[in-house]
Amino acid sequence: LDFEEVSKQSILHPKPAGLVLHYGTAGFRSNSIHLDHIMFRMGLLAVLRSKKTKSTIGIMVTASHNPEEDNGVKLVDPMGEMLAATWESYATMLANAEQEELISALNEIIEKEGIDKSPEASVFVGKDTRSSSASLSQAVLDGVHALGGHSKDYGLVTTPQLHYMVCCKNTQGKYGDATVEGYYKKLCQAFTQLVGNASNRTDDQKHLCVDGANGIGALKLREMISHLNKGLQVTIFNDGSKGKLNHQCGADFVKVQQKTPTGIQVNPGDRCCSFDGDADRIVYYFTDSQQVFHLLDGDKIATLISTFLKELLIQAGLNLKIAVVQTAYANGSSTDYLENTMNVTVRCTKTGVKHLHHAALEFDVGVYFEANGHGTVLFSKAAEDKIQQLAQDSRIDDERKRAALMLQSTINVINQTVGDALSDMLLIEAILAIKGMTVEQWDRIYTDLPNRQLKVKVSDRRVIDTTDAERRAVSPAGLQEAIDQLVKTYRKARSFVRPSGTEDVVRVYAEADTQESADALAHEVSLAVY
Ligand code: NG1
Ligand code: ZN
Image 1 (cartoon, helix red, strand yellow):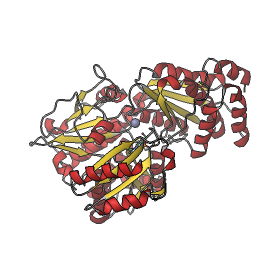
Image 2 (image 1 turned 135 degrees about the vertical axis):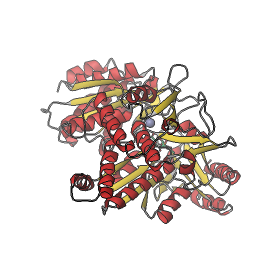
Image 3 (image 1 turned 90 degrees about the vertical axis):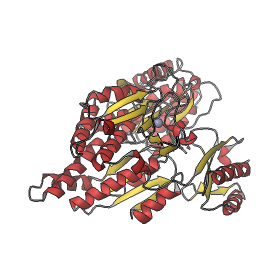
């Protein structure tokens, strides 16, 4: 390892003295002007991680749903999963080392991890459409090369596409081809097979309005559509040609504001969905004939997908354990429906995809979704093998065969590495088509409890500590008691607070029997946070 080269190069990517940033829920995120040195150093770290795992590592330059001025970076581990937690603290240490401490910080990681310096390092890099992404991803590449690593620059890709590439590469192509083309082929072929099970779809049923958040998702959706042979008819709004990334649009805006994004012209009943800025989240919605907005968020998506999978498993006669993983933000009605009507196991984890992903791995079929629309389905190796075997079994009857083949296509349409707006969209569209279900019918599966999310700015959000999957505050003293008292004064109410891992705010969530009550409770709880 050529530390002299690293020292020389790092001067070109200087760290503003005194600046401290943390590897949070989704990597580093901040105004893009603070990130050049972070990018260079994450390039260095990825080389070490690659040597340690003897695998290809991914680096994605994006700040997802944050404003265009922000940017961020996250590392992708060998199977396409989020960076291992122990390495998050190395990332933070390396990011915050002053210029003259950089080499000793690298040495510390090498020693602690017992890294063998000889294996070749390989790093895949991707970026979103932010104006700062081009130079920041160049800084990543500079870091990779300074430490002698090999790189492959995928350029503009969605976050889930980069995760997919890393997984394909490290499984020697078993998961698919590590190319954008390979990604489209795999997903689109599976989609086409799935909708082959839907009878007589009309053009109306094939039509979907997509809000691309003025980001990478719009670009990649357009590419993907050409592989679908008109199996889906998409009108793309907010495709980046006019508006600003995530501004008054995108999945986060629609979920939090509970309204239609700007820049989209739709008629009552039209099926719509929104991606976020790096296309790893999706939410659906429609406006009814009374002009009332209806949101189908991650919870409704998880319900639709798990219902579909449970029915297929029964039809296939497969005894596999299915579970749904949620966070504290899941609407109470969804949890109630899943547990008491559908009788599936429900788990609640802390916020952040890595926690949900981890919990979902414990089941044969683990469906995980954050309420904000980030989620996917994980199939255990044993479950995949059983489904594969059954799909090839010539002795079973037609109904079982059909179910097994549909499960097989479902596995292929899903991006199991991480939540993926494009992949989730194809799966949802296929399920609605197969079930002959309208968006209104899907919405009526259960009725959301009215809810409200607020942000509170405090001087130090880290004084709030939580337990029980973030549903209860253990500090500061008295806060939880105050929340409990407030909740008691409303019907069907629930509320909790937690420090955000991506913004300098405390998040407040409340739900209750009416919107007025949910709003009032959220407001009262936010006053208790000050
Ligand atoms: P924070 O800022 O920690 O609440 C937000 C989302 C997470 C996750 C991350 C990463 C909410 C309430 N929180 O985290 O679910 O998606 O961003 O993007 O939506
Ligand atoms: Zn995102």
